[in-house]
Length: 128
Image (cartoon, rainbow, N blue to C red):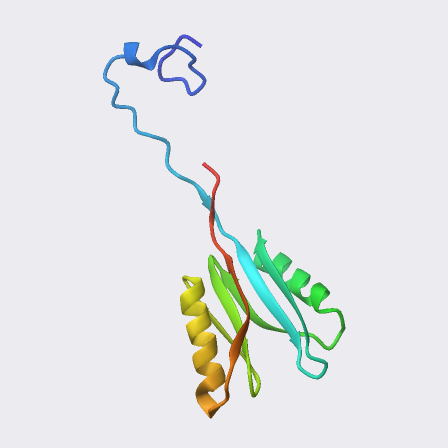
């Protein structure tokens, strides 16, 4: 293509004059995560970086491994954490630290000694 304004132009853009062409806008895709848990057996399943909420939830349930599993947490473009002590508590937020702090705070609310068992993030991905 010989037209400087054509997106497939292969020539030297410095010769096109003006040079005021706006840069292409960034495009980001959402990413989703989910946690499923069977509280009776203690089994659980997680999914991270899925392209849809439904896909993340379906994968977490599958990884949990039985029909008693329930979805306990899901995220979009953020992090999740699970803390275990006297029980299990889940937290979420914009960073691993925020998610862990929230899960620990919930878990320790009854005086239990808790530790983080899982933390993971599903953050948006730049596609352009």
